[in-house]
Image (cartoon, rainbow, N blue to C red; front, side, top):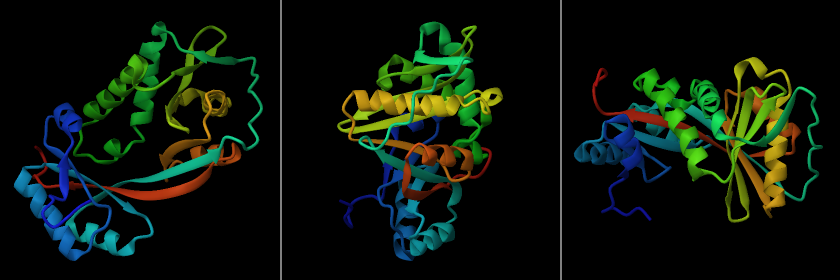
Length: 250
C-alpha cells in the first residue's frame, strides 16, 4: 500500500545493473496532477534515470497526467486468458515441423529468434535504449529461460532439425503463463505459431492449469487474432510509459 510517506518509485535492481543506469518502477498505476509531480520529485531525489509506469488504458485522468509529466508511450500491453476446461485446439500435425522439448544445441538459434522478438518490444520502441542492449536483453532472457527461469522450452523443429520457433510456459499455481512465444520471421506463414501455442496449452492442461495466459502488444494484431482463434479473450489492456529524467545521450 502506497502512503504519503512511501516513495512512489522503487528501484529495479536487475534492470539497473543490466542497462548500467538507475531504473525505477512506479508503485502506483493511478496519477493525477499532484501525484505526477510527487512521482517525478521522488524519482529525481533517488537519482533515477528512467522510470517505468503502467496505466490502465481506460483511465483517462492518469493518461493525461502521465503525458503532462513527459512520459513516453512505448507499448500497449494486451493480456489474454482462456480457461483450461474450454475446448482444446486439435494437436498440430504438420509434416514440415514437430514440437518437442529443446536441446542445448538449439540455444544459438533460440537466441537469434529472441532477437526478432526484441525488435517488437517496448525497449526497441524507446530509442534511448541502444539497439544492442535491447537485443542483449532478449538473448539473456532466453538463456535464463533455458537455465530454469521457466518450466519448459518447447521448440518447433523442421524435419532437418532447424529451429523454427519456441514457446516458454511457466506455472504460477493454477495459472499457466506462456511467457514468451517466438517464431523465426521467415516461418510466420507456416502455422508454426499456432502449433507452438497449441502445444503450450496442452502442456499447461497436462499439469493441472485452470487457466492459461498470454501477453502481446497492441500493435501485434496477427498475434492477437491467433490467440483469439485458440480460445483466448482479452482481460486487460495497459499503456506502458517510460519517464526519462536525464538528458538524451546518457
